[in-house]
Image (cartoon, rainbow, N blue to C red; front, side, top):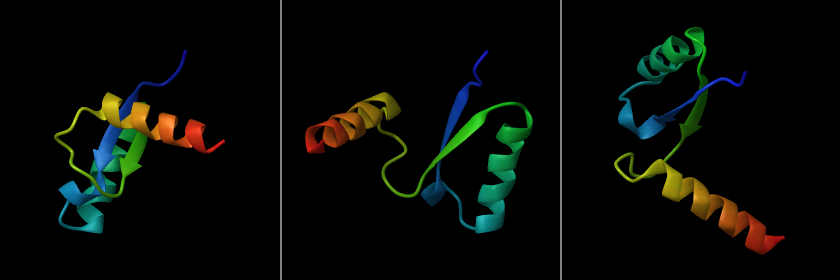
Length: 60
């Protein structure tokens, strides 16, 4: 069985320590944690992932 994925945006946290505590919290309960370094966390993540895949696929 695959692990569920939890998405975090680094920009949502004021310090690295706060971010790491949140990341570890989800990782310790069994989530695979994916971190985005920038971008708007209010945008639908699935649309962003689809755009990322499309941009990568177009460059191949």
